[in-house]
Length: 211
Image 1 (cartoon, helix red, strand yellow):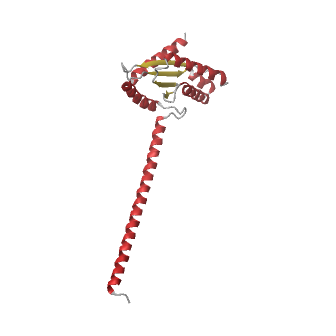
Image 2 (cartoon, rainbow, N blue to C red):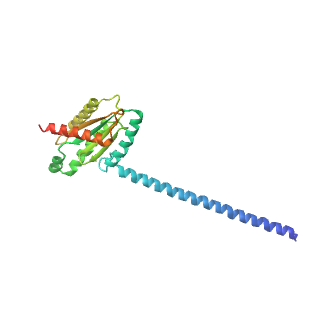
Image 3 (tube, helix red, strand yellow):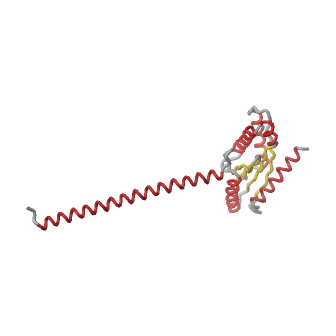
């Protein structure tokens, strides 16, 4: 028969082990709960980022939509003003979009818009900001154009357009009207001012085509 003090000692050891086990299980439970909450928070953040990306993208062309373009372009203009980098803003309009829709249907009109978006992505760099402003209008902010003049980029755009017209096998020719505004960091303009300049130059080119 065990002495009384030994029995008490064994009981205390068992109680201590039981409490330690309960404490350990509690810690494991807390860690599990924290990890689970963290995973849920991460999932929510990923969903938010996805929704945010979707809210800035044009569904048809996968370019930035108007909101996305303005958000990124305004941010880039602040960088350009600080780093003294010249930029060019292109405003591009697909000519006779209404004729394409009315004669060939809106599905063909959508294909034409997708082609224009592909042309712009081919001509400009990944670092440039390309957006569809709505309808048949597109905008591009060409970043850091020290080595590429407006004339070089416009010619490249026309040449790429001509290549698409030769090889795509359409029953009509795509035509673009283009206006270009220059951002000078020494005398910085707002994005709205640049857009207005490029828009006016684009419409001037469009008017000249009718004469």
